[in-house]
Length: 283
View 1: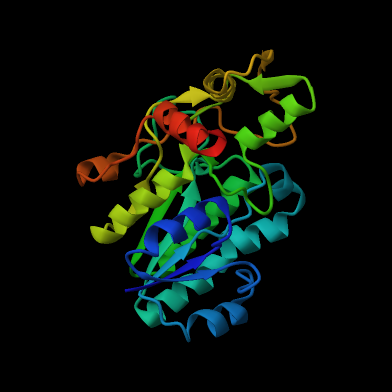
View 2 (view 1 turned 180 degrees about the horizontal axis):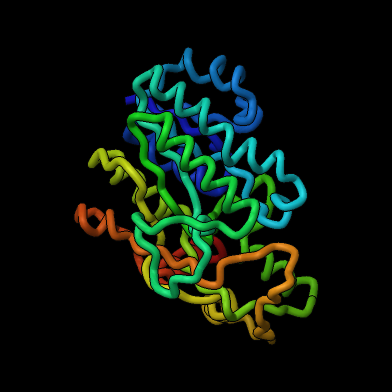
């Protein structure tokens, strides 16, 4: 089986390549190999490869930047998925596309399941939801995998993950203020990749939530990172400002209900995954 991975040099994409290359013929593509926002380039690059599965890990994920560069956000996260879906149909390929917890508004206050109706609050979430709509309407064989609070061993070429950001602040002796009223489930990309392999093997289609188990807020997540690493540092909990430049959901925890119903949920608790990640990353 031939699997094409777009965004292969990002946090998630690099883990996908590592995990899948031992079982399948994997063709990794970075932003130097393909311009996901260019329809003609998509066709010229993907069609000759004739992949059985297309895994799209490419995304514009910097939430504040999405508000400034809205056209780029919608091109990469949204409109690009129309052509990618059309190409998938033409090749009879299975399209696996990653979306986000930010398609929800956070008003539910209990974990979102796959059938809950999205209502994104910001440009990032809206653009990702547009991508979902294109996939659902233009692609016959698809899996839309929603994830949350990703961090990985290989840093993103575009931005640092949360762990890297706060550790950088410690090195610079900067004041650390973290919101304690935004709840989510931080998730290691390695386990997303591992779970995606199960999704491929069991041929699960449709919308699928794939995050670690449990829930926390950004402040408690930061505290856990420092505790595990044995770093003694003061963190100040703060509240989300309602007049912030970017609106964010205050509760975006996802329930892996499809994975559990199919009997293939392998996602660990977020704290167990974090301990494992930090041990590998920092020894």
